[in-house]
Image 1 (cartoon, rainbow, N blue to C red):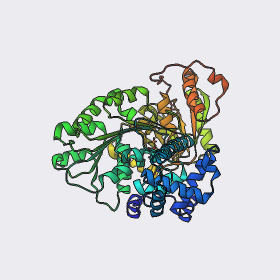
Image 2: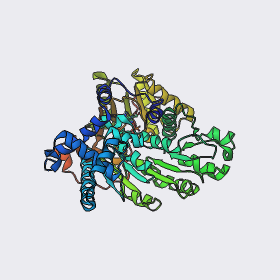
Image 3: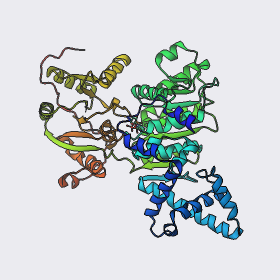
Image 4: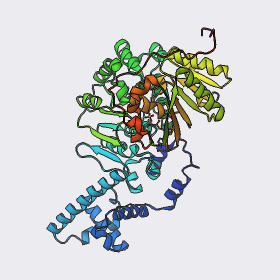
Length: 523
Ligand SMILES: Nc1ncnc2c1ncn2[C@@H]1O[C@H](COP(=O)(O)OP(=O)(O)OP(=O)(O)O)[C@@H](O)[C@H]1O
């Protein structure tokens, strides 16, 4: 256990100060105490259960005995439990009914635990959620995820993948989905191999693919896994048929063109993860996804879909290719992270938006701040305006080269720039540490875009803020955003909730130019 756990923690830096309580909690208690802890919490929510009346000592013995009879992993290694179970073997019929009762109690406990943590699971033969330190010894999972109770997705998904199940997973932004699919994947792959690509992770953008590669490498540090980001350079320089790679991370376009041109062999792939899956299943990418799915022809492949937003249409489509998939939803599907305080601000006109932004920067600029606009032209314009104000500002959009985009992201991560203006290109999956505020300078074009944009703040248990400017043009679409806000516990004016809900495809109205300064030089 220790070895496996240290392998998982290798290269991952946890904020030990922040999680000091949890670490202390974990250190102070022995395995058995934690087991009892779980039991007593179960009893608290089951006052009617007969277990409440028995003494702690008796209860422990009773628990150990019946778990051993059933062969659950939790207490399997306990010799005492085995002895007691043999002593108790009196009548087979009685044992059978005890077993049934115990099984029912276990199912009930699983369901209470899921309810407590807002985990919704469906599918056949779904594994129990991880609940105590004892469970860790069987699947070597993230201790911090369990004690902090914040990163629940890892609890459930690790269990599914370790049991070899395909999975749809939908959990809020910043809840740790990346580690939820990378850590069990590394555990299952065990060690590096020369047998070609064994796992593929698809991400919708290059920035996200690069970030995921970095996370994978950090997590695998000390173990010689070959983890590769499929770059243009790699495609040009290497003979991909001989590529030594355990985990390959790519965007769909790059991978499908590599499959086509260089005959990359994906027939041994054991794990395929589609991160930000709803984005990947959008019309523009579906052909490439299809070619990747076909190329991963190993019949025992395990495929998983992850996102903070998972429309029913995507689920339906994906189900046609998945085998008996488990569906794991943390919280409510398609809702924003509850740790982001969301506000709507009426700015009247385009001019009003710039004024409001300048004013809020003068009053309190609490960097890092991310500002989203609806097009690259507008990103460039706002950049010129803010540069003029002597703000440490960066801009990222699809007109920049790969290296330029990389530099902009690195500068923002390093704190060299305090404000980053962006299009939706970085709205998904990007994990900038501690973004204090997201400003939707231009109203998002869908509820999903809103959820992902504001989800760049309030990550990994931290709190954040999101401000959305709206003008007259945006009013018909306010209700859609207001619904998301209300679902995550934010206050919304009643007049907005009374607006008619519109079905929207894409709301990108033609907006007046942001520029107030004349003659912007061409970049
Ligand atoms: N068990 C954990 N304990 C502490 N921090 C964690 C844990 N798991 C993940 N994190 C941190 O939480 C942050 C958010 O994780 P991640 O980027 O995987 O979120 P996500 O759910 O994929 O979000 P998004 O939907 O925006 O892509 C990261 O900085 C990650 O290092």
